[in-house]
Image (cartoon, rainbow, N blue to C red; front, side, top):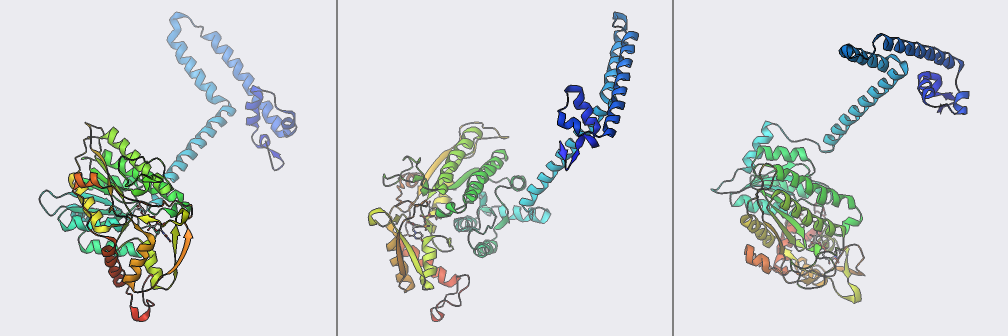
Length: 489
Ligand SMILES: O=C(O)[C@H]1O[C@H](OP(=O)(O)OP(=O)(O)OC[C@H]2O[C@@H](n3ccc(=O)[nH]c3=O)[C@H](O)[C@@H]2O)[C@H](O)[C@@H](O)[C@H]1O
């Protein structure tokens, strides 16, 4: 109880008074008490003795007889009130309580303010709402009104454009984070804007923003593509996967479940949920309980979480397991993209190899095929059955593989790039590090074929040719300068 050589009781003898009424003070504390404090205590004790005397007198004046019950009760309340506040010690306790309450209120206020600071509100206002509504309005009879998260991402941009081009209304949402070059995301946004798709800059974890969007527009569908992607980056930044792929997903589902009408939801899961599964090709009914990365684990968690919202709230859910999607406007963190950049800059590339020298293989799937699968999923999704946040009947729940059904090894991918770029790669081969990769992926797409009419038609040679063409034109690569005039390389 000592503060820098002083006793707290020296400053607040009432504290000691309160303490002394209940139990004797430890010797050390008693020694610390100044004579002023003792004088104050003596005065307080005298006052307390007088109060006790008063109490005895009142009890004598108003004995508890049947005829005087009313007066007794009133006086007793008065007396209790008096006792409660008369002692300075008790008053001190009330003051402490008041201070504590005020402090908790202020800290709550600052928590609320800091939460809204975390999600900068560069949204809202009449003009903003007008843009949202215009972008969400379909331009064909029976057109959909889609909220598309991750709209400035690779798959998000392509799906938004496809929907807009056929006359659906699309409002994009993207947080433009810096997982990879945000200028590429801004460039995609500009393309979308030129086609009349408005992209809101915001985070799927911002429940206020989501509520505002659903207030402004009765979205018929949500295409949820916002996520923390990348398998190996989860080693570096695990929290970002939990933030986007779990917390963000739940915040979005909460908004969807409360929306009126409830939208049907189509969202991006991943081939990585098959993890260490060795049965090929991977089928939707295969086990998915051995993820090899945190990314895979969060996508698997997403499948379970969406199932819960389907079961409890009647949300219509379609999960799409994408298989290593590639193409123009792609993701710079992916192998085909970073290999292209390095090959053009005459830098070495690292090609991982599996156990026993076996080449790694992926069921690389071209973006246009994926877009067709996404649009078909929206078109075949049933309505959600919930109303006013409550389920009114069973709702649709589906999961589809969207792959290409023809895996290609990573060295074969490099050879195709070399042919298209007309440059020989400097290849550094190393054993696959144990950081989340799986040796191969291979999709069985018969379910998607039957239900969605999904039919991938682009092989890796054709797809990479289109990618390289886009890459060279986007980055302004000129063979004459050896790429030295390229932007963002
Ligand atoms: O289908 C998915 O669910 C995932 O697909 C994608 O993951 P991956 O299949 O791992 O693609 P990607 O990184 O292009 O590596 C391709 C191959 O190159 C090998 N690889 C990679 C890098 C390198 O430097 N060297 C190398 O050999 C590497 O070992 C691998 O064998 C998405 O990124 C992911 O977000 C998710 O959607």
